[in-house]
Length: 139
Image 1: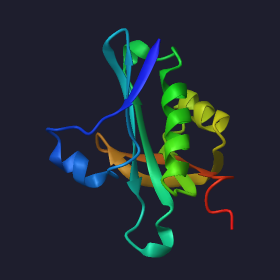
Image 2: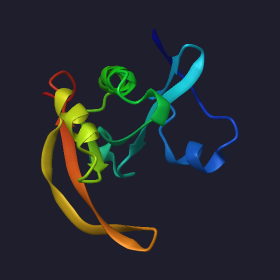
Image 3: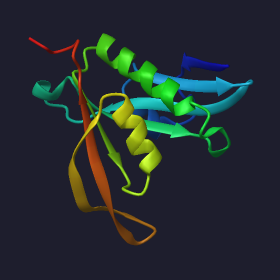
């Protein structure tokens, strides 16, 4: 059984400051921390107040066990309840499991951002995905 609860990390001040105070989830499976998900605002400008970037992580030993699926489903629901009308995600192109997961939950590929960041000294591309809510911000 996968149990999902809201969680605010206590000892990670930088992480805490960079993420919204709502829409934070942790997944536990068999009493172990299996993964987490959270949102970050994409801008401080009020016109983008309903747009957030998703961060989702599943511990390696729990991958393939529907933890990410449960987290993303709950995060979408909580984001809409919090007035978020667009979620966006940046995913490494080779992470096909994450791309498929996001597609399953209504995300679409917007494009590829080339050489947008460096990881271990190598330029990295990301696949940019977004999900527009059908419940929030539809006016």
